[in-house]
Amino acid sequence: MKFFNSLSLALISIVFLIMAGCIPQKKIVYFQDKTEGKSKDKTSLATPIRPDMIIYKKDIVNVLVYTENPDALPGIGSKLEDRTMDNRPAYERGFTVEDNGDLVLPLIGPVPVAGLTVDQAKQEISKRYKKYVANPVVVVKKLSFKISVLGEVAKPGMYFINYESISLLEALSLAGDLTKYGSRTDVKVIRVIDGRQEEFVIDLTDNKTLYSKLFYLKQDDVIYVRQLKNKRWADAAPQVSIVTSVTTVLIALGTLLIVRAK
Image (cartoon, rainbow, N blue to C red; front, side):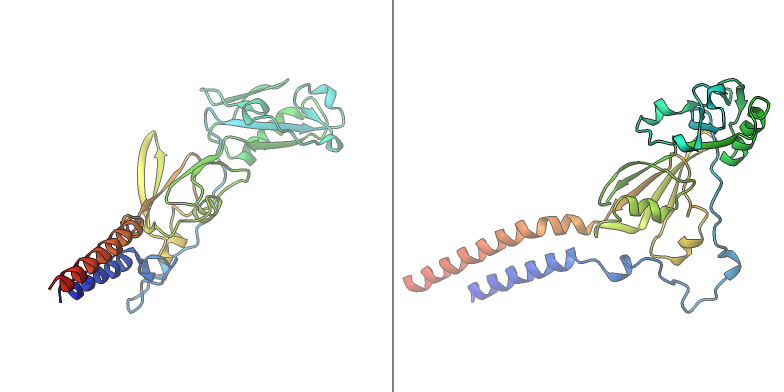
């Protein structure tokens, strides 16, 4: 009887650990409609608009001016047919926006760009270069747009963004998506607003996330995915299972020896 009681206890422990390591489907599936059975306020679910990229102080900006006479613009001029891949680091390729918000460029000198969108900066730079060269084609690219993705994702790290904007979902895709032990209901976005660090919580299992003002990320945003408590049980389950199995065998052998001794 003691043997069966001990064996039952061991089996119950194993089942409990397996169940503790399981994650309910509602905590895994993205963008569920959580308004079922409730009145839906569709007026608040406007699709977010991709934001324009803003240039800030200390940003690194790459500026190229394509012209028929690139020799007139040393260090910045180029011909369209001369475009080549530049593998230098961003810091070496670009111009840094100074503390006063100016971008100092060859020939035209300082151009106030802090607070402008990339398109606005391009128009301002183009207008100034037209005084020196005919029909300049100005290309402005921001090289310092980066985000960080940390926590329970497949590939945590810092990512430099090579396009004009990035959404939260695109950022998580870059990081290989959440692991199965990443909390879909508690994804934090840490953002600096007016010099202060603010923290926001996003629930990826709620389809309202698709309409959130945080759907599109800003420069230097940090995304942190919290670890579920289930992972602790799941990590411990194999070791506990082995210990339980060994204990069960020892109890069985002990019970058998006691029976034979009688």
